[in-house]
Length: 137
Ligand SMILES: CC(C)(COP(=O)(O)OP(=O)(O)OC[C@H]1O[C@@H](n2cnc3c(N)ncnc32)[C@H](O)[C@@H]1OP(=O)(O)O)[C@@H](O)C(=O)NCCC(=O)NCCS
Image 1 (cartoon, rainbow, N blue to C red):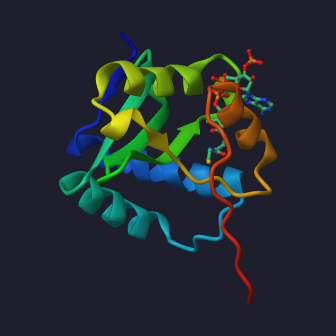
Image 2 (cartoon, rainbow, N blue to C red):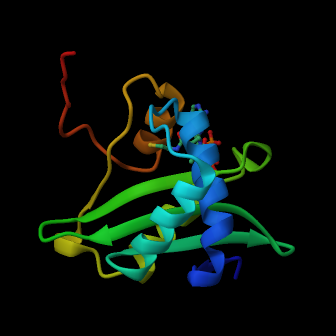
């Protein structure tokens, strides 16, 4: 089975994948790799859990999530660029549905409006539009 729960030993790998996620999703998060590592470490030591997709010893993707009072919140999902469109993202979401007790049987996540490819992905794996976040600067 290429999917396994992450441990504190995976923090460095996860922080580097998180950096790829920020880059590829067009997120405005300015954190350095060291800061991402520190944040990931404290997340995994508290309310978050991560699951990794591995092949031949290489981590190709991950999902990070936590259980909130009304739903399970999927905070991050990333698949390495060279491993995309092979069904890994879908497998990670399906793994959560099959192996985690989702709060109220519900998964929720946020996506940036400009990240149209990810929006296509979320819809393809079964998510429906629920909330639109607006802001003014
Ligand atoms: C979004 C992401 C996680 C998808 O992972 P993936 O492993 O490539 O997705 P899958 O191969 O499981 O795709 C499942 C289905 O989603 C849809 N899909 C996936 N990527 C898509 C794309 N770029 N454009 C359109 N549809 C897409 C397709 O319907 C696909 O099925 P198909 O390949 O049989 O047509 C990956 O592209 C990624 O890491 N992107 C950068 C980070 C990011 O934006 N993460 C989400 C933040 S909200």
